[in-house]
Length: 268
Image (cartoon, rainbow, N blue to C red; front, side, top):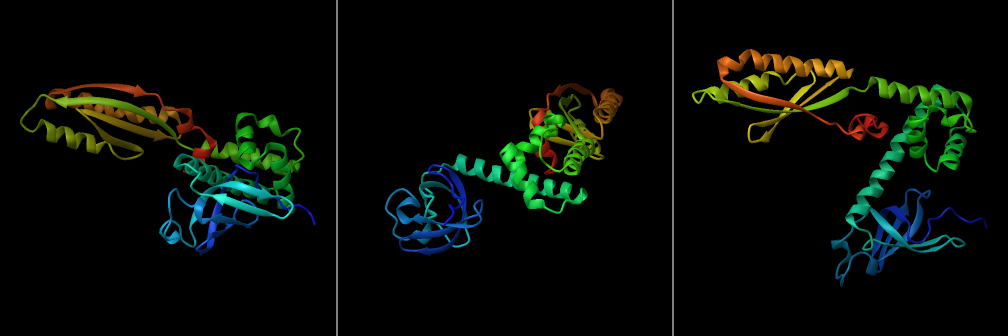
């Protein structure tokens, strides 16, 4: 009997609970072809558990830690209480990112008219560890696929798709605007209306406290986004004397991960 693909002890796994009794819960491990695993009641939560259903329920998706794994018999035991909230969040994010990138891979395969999709997915995971790591590698160096055993048309399609996503994604810039009016008889109302008039065509303004506002502008290019900020500044300057305005504006640094990272682009 061949060994099943099962996780190792201490691995974090995503489990769907499908049956519960007084001894614990039976789960399907979605990353391992729905392999059945058992979550003992003592591993559901710390302390004495009077009613297990107060802690978990059928149909619930949870992140667990593997505490026992028999690769010969395919038996896996889990612990829910040995997983921290931060580990749960990170694991679910990792899984969801992999699924999104798998969707991109399938789209590229369809464009390349690939028939053996499962085989190509297997090759990619053997070479890069995961589809996520492969996409990141391509993003950083398009030549990384030269030695890959993936179908040549699929490789071309992947590079083209990733480049298209990056081209089509809008560029984002942010500025902090400090502004107030010295007109104490209606100046604030006029200023509020003026700022509200800017919120359109890819520009958003949010109050940040103490006469401080955060302006976000986006465009197909950074120049286009900067032009929108310039138009705002020109408009404020034209009203400066009439509204008795005092202001200063400063550009904020946008993290690369907020702007160019491929995982961000695929979720927009």
